[in-house]
Image (cartoon, rainbow, N blue to C red; front, side, top):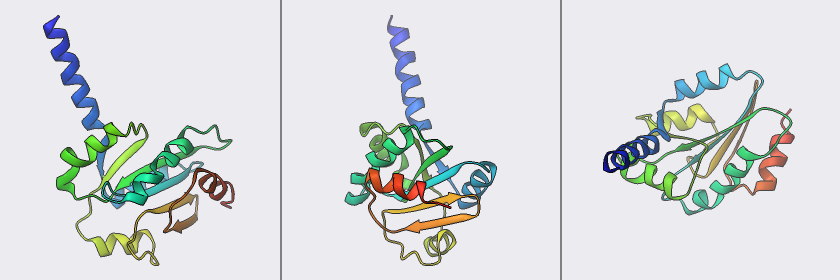
Length: 155
């Protein structure tokens, strides 16, 4: 029995760590290119950003919504890489976030900001909607209804 509990504990710790992966912008671009018929909703957030944390449940609801088109919600943390294990992973676990969560692994903040959207001031929360060649970027807090409406209005 004791061995079984130890194995369960180790497996649960491993699965928690697997919830948050490092992501480069090149990897993000490849991911988007692979999902030709998929609309991507990419939210940029951080554990220390109160408005970001407040809107995360809306992205979880969108992820679970029964929409008529394929949608992938990607949550990209802008926390420091050094905070992955002691900050981001516990945050994801404690807030029961089940969607795809990444930590952005890019050394040059100004470069990735301009690459995501040339008009991005760097403020978060920020969300990028991508449907084929259509890209819409917003620096704002989204309600659940606003997310669905924006998604449906992508042309």
